[in-house]
Image (cartoon, rainbow, N blue to C red; front, side, top):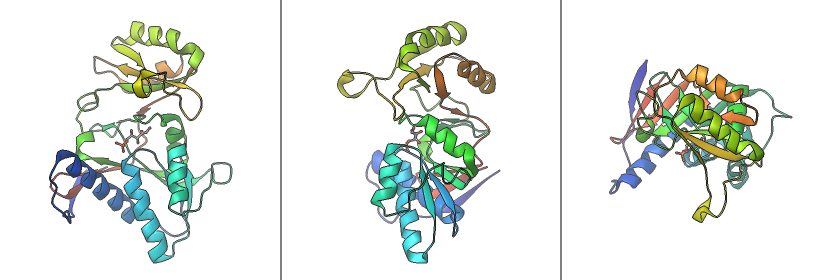
Length: 249
Ligand code: 5RP
């Protein structure tokens, strides 16, 4: 089921990246307008699209005097919550969330997601799993029929550092493709996650049964989590190039 909502841009978009930013904003605003209520415990995702959702969240809290608490999925999300003056909590105090809102790197036609472009996949999956509703926000570039059509960097896998070589070998031997250790700025060293781990990006070549592959990869010793989110997203808001929002659920 999908629907479309018209919300036209307030300014003209001159470049592709301006257009994508406007699309992120449309998606973030629409999701917060539809899914946030008074007294909600809200999971806050990571990335660039969530910034717009938090802007709108802060606006609504101020205008409507909403009482909410926010559970972050990363250091970045924690900073966003604090910078916007929103109440910060955690899963110790709020293990049950009303809603979690987060971005995605790719969304297929059955709402299977690739996440972890920003390396926060483990906390994102934990928080999403604790939420009654998991809502995804994305711009039009993330929409695909089949995983791998849009996001070319592969499926992120968070791993314990000492195990990254055996895990790399195991994934390529069993499932093919190429596994790359994610490197930081100037390739000075590997990216280290908020949990002190490394990220492998698995550039798969074939379409797989993602549920089976996800389970198999998670069974490899040293794998912490994968960026495959299967059967978790309830609804996705896509901000579109023409100023509309498309909803898929
Ligand atoms: C971070 C994520 C992000 O949600 C994902 O990479 C999308 O980011 P953006 O909104 O910047 O496109 O999974 O780990």
